[in-house]
Image (cartoon, rainbow, N blue to C red; front, side, top):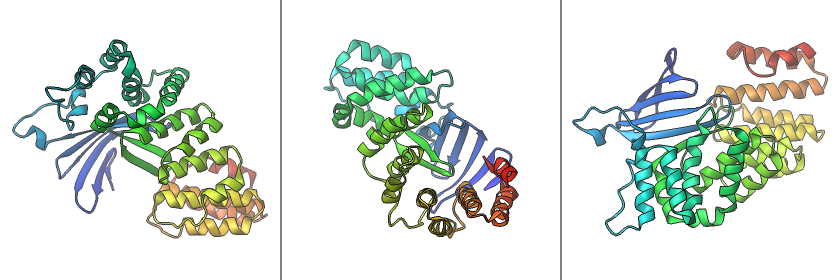
Length: 323
């Protein structure tokens, strides 16, 4: 709930919290004592979230530091191998340069340090997209090793990322192999490499995030039948499934079934508690469908509903001009 510009009151079943900030940078605090600091590139869907605990600092007042990234991970034991101790120290230092040094010193685990560096680079506005894509591709080539590497599995747990996989759908997750894969997909999509992004998505563990990633790329590649297969028997239970119903409607419309598309969009909007962006996306696609059916008045009505809540919704003004 927005209570002031840049300030929101957050509710869940077990906590109450406040968050404040600007697009690309926010800080959230809840009644459990958890502090979430997020940073990202607005418009890309790429974010990094670091979690710390006020309880862990009981009796102390200290500004969160980059080293807090690994605060939830126990230090390596006395008999831990040199590589593990080096990775831990680099993460505590909280910067890319230290992790790069570890990768150079221990070439056999460089793919691990590169995977731990990757989410930090996502939030760097100066990162070159081509260089970032190549870096991710090199890590992906070692995916079989990365997925079963205990060093990566243990130390990736130190932080979380929130992926904005679609308008109104943000999925926070603990960093790990699947989270890296989904981040790689976002980078590939930014470069228009939809075939490669789809291949990555289809190789990840099946869940809502990967289903959305698969569908998004199938839509970009105009593989309407594949979209219909991916979204078969979807029920509207949350924002992600509502969006999958919208994707299904697009595929139905493009395969010459506008009435079926309208019904799928009705189902997507059946739960009014869905995110406003998801509901407006359904209205926008319904307006396009009505236009294709020659029902300009109904299309305008849906676009007017969008403008009532979001005057800047992408594509609305342009579509109105065509009507």
